[in-house]
Image 1 (spheres, protein in one colour):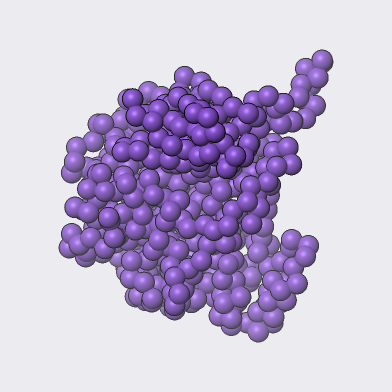
Image 2: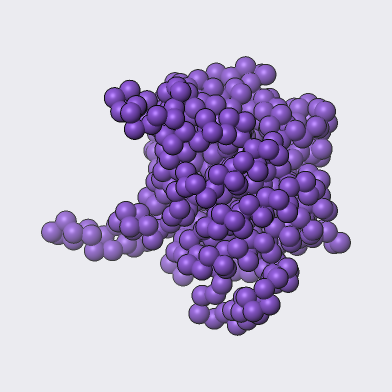
Length: 121
Length: 405
Ligand code: FES
């Protein structure tokens, strides 16, 4: 299995992403809260650049103990990246499509070698 | 520029190029050999407010022009000459081309609208795009009829002279100020035959019935010219029943179909197709799923209450399947047999016209049609371009105008 260089760790700050290519593979690599995640940059909707959009915390409803709707908030744990073409959202830790968890982006292994980050293709 | 994100984070973006954003679309165009056949996009958009100062120069009423220019220049209250409204098309900035448009640069020497439109057309492999405005889709709700007329007149003149004259790949069905039937009639007479004008368009979000007698001379004039008349869907969150909905998704999903349902019902049940048998009608941007519903509902009730519709010589659904439809936003059901039945039901192979609605948030690429498993190659090509070439008499002669890599 070939490895594709992504970036040096100190040049890839937390909260950012890189897009790398190798042959027919186009991969989005995210650095989020100390971890690295990599997915195919190919949206399951119409083939948009799924990994190139904004990173947004999941929006959640706040429901009161009496089951009334109290408001909305951004999730403390769940974070999505959003395909910029039409807004499909994907879980940054799993690649699952937020609207239908039966769908998920192809995941790639991220390998850290010393101070460098690679993905296996 | 910086995009505001969740938890007070920001994303810095230095440049934006819609051609680059559509790199994957260009790859689809190449992989699917779009170079081999014409693609016509029957519903695309630009943002006319970006050129609003230019457009207002074309307003003939000096008082209205000064009023509009003044409101446009010093607008700090979010109000002015255009009926606005609440809307979240950009999905909180998730659809990044909305905020990033501001930093996109046109090619030097070309009009911004021409340059940006050519950019996405080439990326998608689109040869000819029928272009419409964006905020003006709400103009039929303007409380001042004379303002709708003045803005429509100025916009149409500006569009013809500054955009359509410059780029033959861009065409338009011109905005009719439909709240004033006489002005609409004058518009048809004045603009028919101008370069790039391929029909006329009524924005559907409005409150006048399409079967009113005052419109008959408008329809007659358009029929005589052999041009199509289109109803372009839109939402109106202030509509009483729409205002019951608290989310943009709700009002968009229902609103973009609602007005066209009302107009189509009036159109068919009042026998307008019998009175104007040669008038070609296109229903734009309501998707497709509403059509089997309309056909079934109207046919079923007509069988019992035909006495209320003496003008009809056949079932309502038979008139509906003689009209034309643009494809976007094409609902992609989990069960694809539903879509296949819909195509069959509306005679899609001859009546359906591909549309992207680009750059709006729910645009469709040509691959939404090209990749359908139940269509034969000929049907794909007809829907993507052949039907529109015939309807608009485009005479492309199989020529490919888009620069497909
Ligand atoms: S292609 Fe990604 S949301 Fe449509």
